[in-house]
Length: 465
Image (cartoon, rainbow, N blue to C red; front, side, top):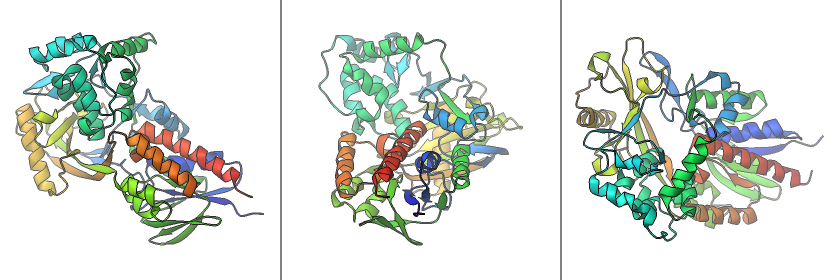
């Protein structure tokens, strides 16, 4: 009998774990899969832990998109499909000198009808007039900046008070320096001359498909249930997960690759890089100098997410929404606040407390140098400014996500194509998956992982047996 082929998966987040599961589930010949994770636990940027007397409150993402099927399909594959829940119908707001409900008829902040901004107090009369002329403007020259394109079409206010808060909150981004191609919902609209008319047609097409389905879902045990169950399934199928194991170098050999780690060396026939771009540059340098140089140029924003348990007696009864976003011109430190107990029915402590999740930090604003006490004080000061109440939390949890949000600069995908083309020549058998590459959302990471696993299985099949 020949030895089984081996795949090294670098990174134990949802992309790495899904890659490993997909290979183990679909390989027709014996394949050994080793997941290498530098941290003490798997899960990457997904983490769920007890808080305020509840067993599972997310410290990172608290849901995934349902309309993009990859996460829902994975949840079903893992036996979690029946345990999914969706948010309540509580409405989100934008804070600009007060709370304003986010208008309907938007696509990632882009108005699909004039009424989306015409009746909103969020936009000034002059801002409404500027936005209303969008259908009559000539075509906008090609650009790969979300901010440049939207400002040119609708003016500054639509961008700064609708599009940038919505897109920026997802990517912790400054959308003036963020790739349009990385936001496919908006990029698809640019094929038409008018964004407003294109968004209107897209919304109408969705409406003809029947009643609106939930947009988001999450396991009742938190998003961490996905990665926890993934890791269990990988090991049950014979996969090996090495934690506290840092990859320092990857070298090409005559028969495959040698991966050097902090705990020893590992031979592999193929490598899936499911780790962030910037750290990955250091260990890929021996394989491909040019690819490593480009990866090292990736920028990553840091975010702090503070969970607060607010006694019921302190919470203003009028705040029944799901939370709010803060436009950049209005920001001091807080970029968004989620009223978790309004948003999720299963996030309601028995004593009636409100669970808040408050985000600080983004591209261009680094808060990682502040200690936890200062971060909490900054958050509470901004919350008082926004909701007009001095809050005294009964419990506080600070979750730090250092360099956690890759920034897709304009022409991001052209650089990624150059990297992959170079590696396909210098080191066939090395592929990428994960948030740094083709989308940071959970469904996007799963989709990339599936594609990377398929490509890896094809590579293994092409090797001499």
